[in-house]
Image (spheres, rainbow over the protein chains, first blue to last red):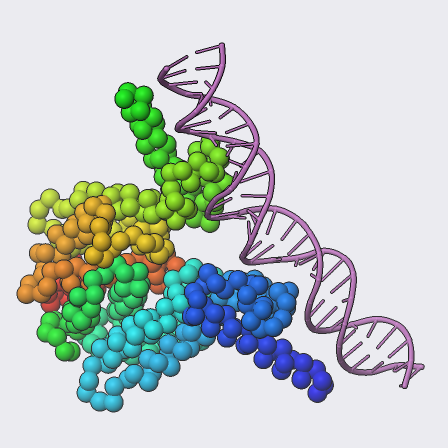
Length: 195
Length: 195
DNA sequence: CGCAAAATCTAGCACTGCTAGACATCCGAG
DNA sequence: CTCGGATGTCTAGCAGTGCTAGATTTTGCG
């Protein structure tokens, strides 16, 4: 029993080691550099060991993505302003900074198509947490509007800004103004900056 | 001189043939199916011929993307409502339908990272046209706001919705409501549906 | 017609994700 | 302590990728 446990524990550790190595490699050199060979070399095992833990490379990326959602959720939670300030702005700024500082991780989470069950199936808890933080940020400005749909709009807008910026498709000149305009538009008729 | 011209013309035709074949293959089976071998087979030439027209596979995808921007620009222009109706809504609906009906093409245009010179360099005319159509759609609701920055926000929101929908990351239940909420928010304090 | 030049193809490289089968290591029974 | 089966790991290889050097064919002019 104890031996069995030790093995399972070691296996779990190696499982996490693979995920961490994949994320690090991707964040340092991009996902193109994450080949099964390089990843195997980095964790100091041969390729088939990777396949004993994950069904394929996609599954590894998916695991990285899901844990990335956990990171994002924690970041958004930390970013909740103490009092008075705009939760919406705080969340938006935190979200965009996450996307800007960890583009490879963000890519795995929300750009690369993965069979993560977003729909009716079992959505990973990390994902629900992250979305929940966005919902909480939108709630103060919802007015009469549908909270979930409005949050999806908020998320989509942030996601669009994040990805188009990352691709160099938006003019850096408007970086500040853009967020102000978005927040102003979403905040029930407040079209001034600041809120 | 005539012979030279004929050759150049035939070359140009084949150039376009390659682009069309790549786009068709991508739209039918996804970009993963667009390998240099399959593409060469489809145009009935060997692989090196592709490389005599394009520097590499990326350049082919880029060419498809740029022409796709032309398609989008024309679609948006056609979608301009005759009178009275919301240009913003018309453009948004046309944009999202384009993304929904031609996901592979949209991917090449705005998702896959390509070295298309969006920034200070020579931006392709097709791209300027498409963005110009969005500017024209936003103009009626700009109010005091910066037109270009506001258009970028509009575009980003549409892009975010398009890509997150494509990835199955948004709930279909909110499909209608989402667009209404976005348009309402962007339209200077109009938070009702319709405009 | 003959022949250089231009166009095209064949065959191959180094790489990818993935896996069958050989090999090594481990743990418990005797 | 030793042996044998089970578990774990690795070596070597497959089919496919983007890309290209060099052989081969086609072209159009003198």
